[in-house]
Amino acid sequence: MSTAASRPATTVAALAHLLDEVSGERMAATVAILAGVPFAGRRVGSAGGAAACAWLAQHLADLGATVTLEPFAVRFVPEVYTTPDVHWHDGRTIRRLSFGRDVAVHLASADQPLTRRGDLAVAGAGDPGGRWLVVPTGMTLFDAYGHAHGAAGLLFGRGVDADGWHYTMLAGPNPGPLPILTLDTTTHTTLHTAAAAGSGWLAGNTPIRRLDVPATNVHGTWPADTSADEGVEVLLTAHYDGVGDHPGLRQPAAADNGSGVAVVLEAARVLARHLPGIARLSVALLDAEEAGALGSAHHAEQLRQAGATPLVINVDGAGNLHQAAAVEGGGPAHALLAALDQAGRHTGLPLVAGPVASDNRRYGAVGLPAVGVGAGMAGYHSPADTPDRVETATLTAVARLVTATGWLVTVDPATLQSLIGDKR
Image 1 (cartoon, rainbow, N blue to C red):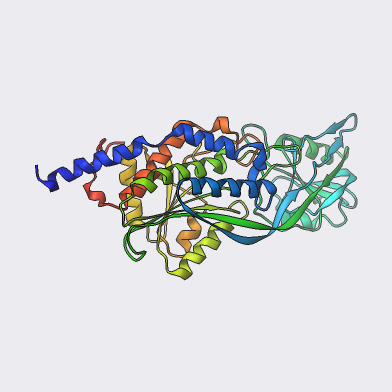
Image 2 (cartoon, rainbow, N blue to C red; image 1 turned 180 degrees about the horizontal axis):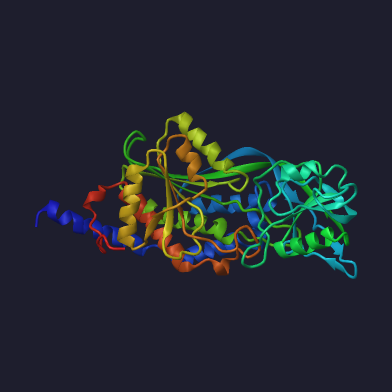
């Protein structure tokens, strides 16, 4: 058999050997560590975030990477610094609202650590002075402010997740002039009914402040055998920050995005030993994604100014694969998407075009070929995002996809024969 004829079979065998090295159990252990108490939800600028940064830097060094830390500043990160105390009287009984389930602090809220008590009223109906205004469903924040002169505060309704938790966000509107609480839809409806009937009062506070904090991206690189002007550079990225714990309320950030970090570390571990000599491998573990994808914006601009053109594969959420993984391309990503599709066919992981609203968009925006991969998560931005809900099989499937893609872009994808053909 000629060399040309044997090359596809050799390529398939080499990739199969590569993928056999992917360990779901190792990734599950990484997720459990990142979601642990010492890292406290990994909010940017927090002690837990700094501890996670140090752990990840050491992990990359142990994989043989040259590690660098890239600091940058993040402004106005919201922090609920003590548990809000909120209770209301329905005319018969005082009922305390549970933080995280019944009530949360709105991102646009003013910082009000002291409890304010006031009668309930409906925004837009009657005198707002000294009252907590229940904002009707469909009324915007802007319109609610227009009805709220002299009010004690605003009460908005907001849906909770399937586990009954409010979700936490760090990126959103700037603080306004009033305390603002969000209520789960059932509680909001109950208080709206009481307010419309002219009965009941509420007492509550909104201890939320904005902090200017340090952030740090963690970079790992493995040298190629040739000059940096030759060969392909594969850049694997994932954000390691979470929304952080609240006082008395753990938010482990296991799937979002401990799972993506675990996938990137595992793919890098395998690829670092098997990429062709002219190929370059780098990893960026990014901070401040939850605050507006600021870590990737910082890194992408550095790459643009340096004239670097890596192929970027970003993973955000590899916890709960249902039928297919979502893929979003950005920049001149045609060749990268072709390799990703080939990798999906080879590994048996179905792919669908879908939004992956994460760091990949920052790289694509500066003209780099970038793809985002997402495979689901449970307990989004809430205490329900725990390691036990991250599926080892999903971690394995996504890591195999990323590993295969990273390897394929360094060889001729046309030489790879899919073991499962074109059928999904």
